[in-house]
Amino acid sequence: MLKPKLTVMVIKDSNVTIMVKDMDKSISFYQSIGFAIKNRWQNYYAQITAPGITIGLHPTDKNPAGSGNISIGFTTDNFEETKTLLSKSSIEVQPREEEGGQFLHFTDPDGTELYFIKPKWG
Picture 1 (cartoon, rainbow, N blue to C red):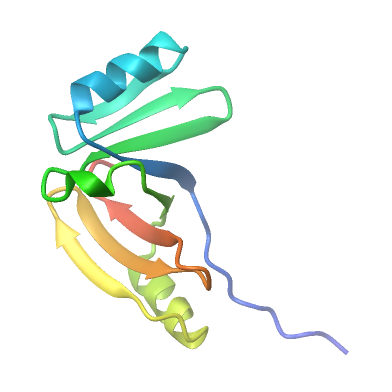
Picture 2: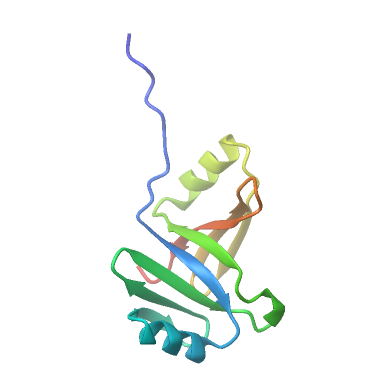
């Protein structure tokens, strides 16, 4: 007897995003310990890389006290399917769209911020 095929989300890429007070200062710090800039969108967001890891840097202009917090992001091609699968798993999402793409924000059982993004940058 064949088992039914489970539909799972396909994660293309991922990163951990650190909320920072000063983008330039943070980028400089990470470069000083060996990271390289992968992408930067002015002061909206930057990706830095080292072997085996991509870290996103996101400004906390509105709430500097929130700096040092993290979120983990996953890239997806099929935004609607991802949204449906999260809903079927009873995961409450907060959808958002901005200059960088479409987002589905949610938390794990311990409150860690997670998100799926369908980026506009490709």
